[in-house]
Length: 293
Image (cartoon, rainbow, N blue to C red; front, side):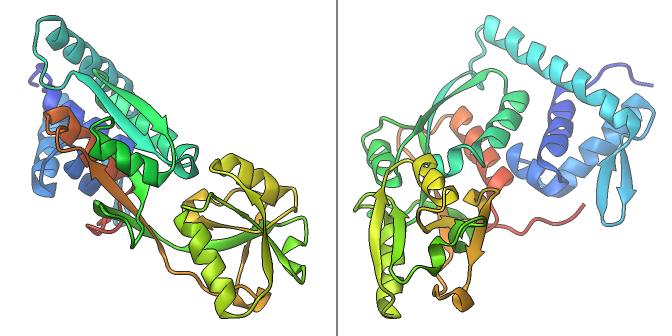
């Protein structure tokens, strides 16, 4: 057995474990599926045992594959720390990432946790704000990368990376959605979803009034879960205790929500490429189809 383990192979292995498929891992580490598969075959040859087992159309980690995970994380971390200490700055630095709080508590933790394990030498500084403000910060160079809600009226829509249903939601324990005049919990006047919801209700001549306004998703969640109002959320932002409303409940269908990736013109270093590829691989469902492994 070859007793020298390849850090690049371990990084690819960790990406597969973190992201759930060979396809997503390939995008995150800038390799084709065939290259990823070849690396894993060579890693298994070096270890002298299988680390993946077929489970239908998918692959899962074997018991030895699970054991390898922690060793891989430690070796990658030490490798990157060593390169940093001796001046190799290729994948070392800080990236400023903007994200609306609609996604911050649902999508962001798992994305950043996986990214940190794969790239421990890259520090991510996160700013939560509305999509419009994040777009302005990108144009001004105050942020490197931003995840935003696409608006058909936005000056810069960026790259659409994810599309998901947009839902009317109410509390599953209350009846705010049955009121004759619907009480809405919405964002400020610049909010795209606010405009969409009001225009949709106007089209069916359903009476409503804006009862709660906040730029904080948490505040809107609180109003809905308390049974005080109805709001509009994308699928990934729907919480426990919420009921999705349909046309039979008197709420018209809404267009899908599109999530885009914005990038500053000055953010062109390898570490920016690494983060953008990781985000697309972790949450994107538009630019590519994820093939089962």
